[in-house]
Image (cartoon, each protein chain N blue to C red):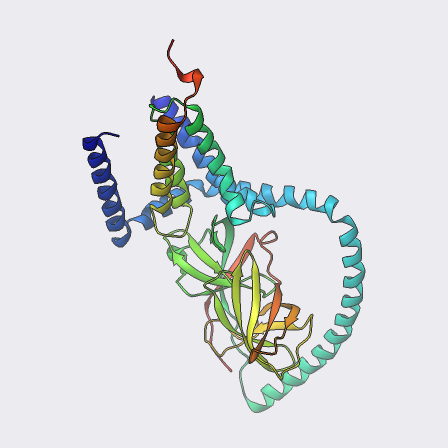
Length: 106
Length: 268
């Protein structure tokens, strides 16, 4: 569990740093919303491909939001809360409306 | 979701929001952001440099033809500027002699603080530099490049870092003048590194490639710092003022080092 969280922290920390310092130089990624996809897509994938009852997606969202907040100039916690709510929403939709046969216990 | 867990979730969310509101209002986010910027600055510097080099490398391929054309244009421009430079140095000599004759001291140079760009905000036209309040940086100080091109002004200041609100930021606006024409207007940011010149009286004649410099009217920036050049003039019959889309001279891709003007006099 701790190992998994450390990996998530490092992953999103470096993704945010890469977005703010490296990808800025590339025209397509320097655009507001496309730039955010670099962080948003891994977050979406983690939330989509884990068992909806597990919490790693929410933890990943918290780390991603936290690091975006840390390296942004705005009000702290806006992205943290947005990312957590986004993750919970995915989990809610998956639990309520989507059934993946792969997740069924045999 | 069951009723008690919904209530629990709602309560946790409200508590979190209240906690973060308090966290921001007490200013506790500043030391936290400063700490993370401090430990990340070596990585950020390395990524900034690598990003610049790699994007330059790819741009060379994609813009080869464009570069050739631009090169021809620039060669012509250099020739024009050499002639102009010669004329200006004559004027400078004359000016110096006149000032000496009148007993007026030369304007003091700006006091500058050197800073390195390490990151850019994901959503806004704001960049971060590695100098903060410990180095003498304060909010509102102008930021320029080594070629005396306007970059923006200092926004939030942390102990070891500062945020520079670029002139293209949507919240940025300042007075500017068109070189040699004494036409004044207001430069406003559009976001995404785009700026435009607004509030130019309709009767004034402005043209593409006119250079825009800061004016001392607003007191935000020192007079005479290069901002950009007019890219397209937009005139509408129904509006009292004309506007012009500008091409900023400052380029984020080439920005690695910049200078903060720590004190300047508005001698107009």
